[in-house]
Image (cartoon, rainbow, N blue to C red):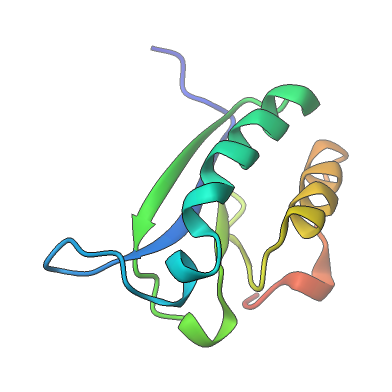
Length: 101
């Protein structure tokens, strides 16, 4: 198996008991997984997209993390995802959406 260039994590607020009940899930986390997957394909970005358990930054959610860059983006929307992926494709970062450095 070829390792993808990026691993994009979308918080889905899964808890220890397995229930998705947090902020990210209630605000589109599940729908963003398919959207990011399709947009990466459209942009020619080689990425694996995964859902995660709670990333513990609910106040800044929904959250998307791009590895290996370690970019943590908060309050993502489809418009922001488009901007983030455009920047990623060009080797840049959208600083205004970062929640950590």
